[in-house]
Length: 273
Length: 311
Image (cartoon, rainbow over all chains, first blue to last red; front, side):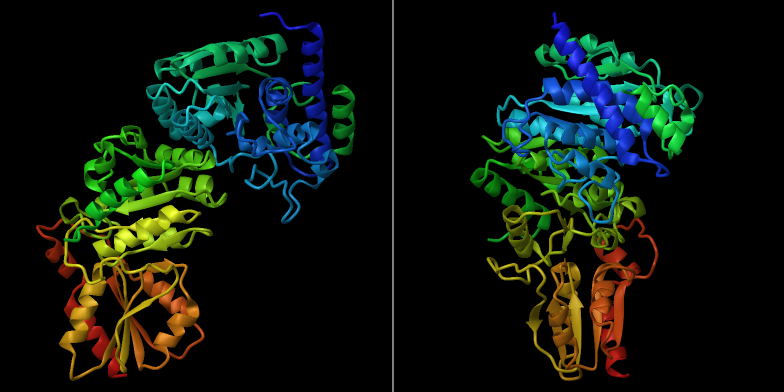
């Protein structure tokens, strides 16, 4: 499928915008999940600014598509997308993690546009599967998207959900795996190696599409193919770079959840401009 | 004639409710013939309302959370050690923080699955469900009360846990009696000692009160709603007697006894517990054998009442 250059370019810019928002959101001297936010940013931009049927003025719109951030530690990325789509003011982003504030450290039900509390890793795909089952029971066309971290696949519950979603043929469910190759304490390949990821999902009864998670055309193509594919849920294995767009953070384990110095903050915003 | 088995009452009530409300769904983890979710599975017209989730309780509970988010009223059932115990984290993280409308059934609870032993006997589920913010915890005394509680759960929002016995025994609650969350219910008046009891131990508390007639006047109070629990009501029922005994098929740590003691923490009222003394259960040849082994009999309640009365 062909997408206009204009669309591709505008979504690429949205990805960069979300990355800048994440940097502004955490500011200087406060720890935040920059690395995993930057690896997922293009995927999230494609969903929120193009693919998903949503209504920011009516977050609980009955006909909306659902997005769950199973890798909930990159909440700042989802907050950035929601704010830029108009669910709440962009100016509120730096107030994330204030006591009692509606932007908590992990996605929290009650924040406009957040569909469920996520971030206790491994649970988001099951929540999404429950939504998909319920929507099918009501013969509704809404789709459910779940962004899963590759490190998160250590959790056994991911495979429980993969098995039951495959068995129940939840073709209204799409898991997007952010395969950046790193987890909090090091390289996934050095700890619990997750490869071959695509084969694993295929063997659990899923349609699998492998893409470059920073190539907007490939992202859009995969999301459309996932929607058209019937009889199985789709897993999009998106190969990404942790810390993408920030030279000193790319592929660096240390930027999983770290505070930025003033110098790093300025340089990151400059590079993401 | 009314059901005398809480599990059967649960399954039959779910069938009735499913026919009335298209949004109710019932989830099982390969134990639907025990939980009686099977009655929904085999009911004509309700085939798609029973969702078999396989032997994967963690996934079942989070899936129930997702179902609730799209407007369904899921009842997720398994043995208490699995539906509540194995999936504790999912109940806490996926369901309770967001106050999702998920109903959790801890079936074959307490030591009512006497043959299967410690792995299948939940002596701790009231404690770990009760401590979760936003969670309600209900322990119906018998099958009649189970029907009332299940109907309440289906009609009211929020995460709720119901604890059910595996075995049949005679009802002590009238059929059709109203269930009011939070309120202890006086079953028998008395002036010397108050016994607060839940589940099957209510039956034994009533027997104990009868055995003590003429010697000690015992008030017997049913506590089907461990949480919420109206503190003022507990204080009122405890403050005009010499002291209080609690009786439950659960550890003496953190269950009904804990809830009553917490309610009475500013009162000068002695409290004695009848429950499982910080130990696991065991396989047994009969339900009575394991109840006797763990100290959960009418005699144990009689002795506790006498001890309070003699203070």
